[in-house]
Image (cartoon, rainbow, N blue to C red; front, side, top):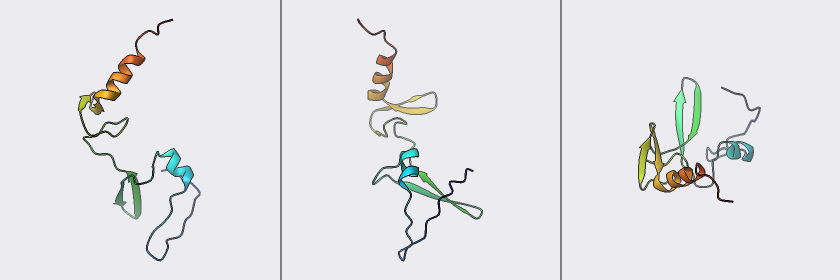
Length: 88
């Protein structure tokens, strides 16, 4: 586990603020669900991803399995078009 060097205090309501640098690095946006785990003496926060949602855009509709990961048709089509030769 990497040390971030960041320390935050818990407020009166039990809240802490996740610094913007970490939210950007971890792609955590406003209203994103966060999972909370306990591992021995540690509290672990993780961005929640439904096992049914697309690993690229988090869409939960029209997903297919691709090498053990869920991908929606829209992202699959976009990826497919990236492999096509560009017309000049």
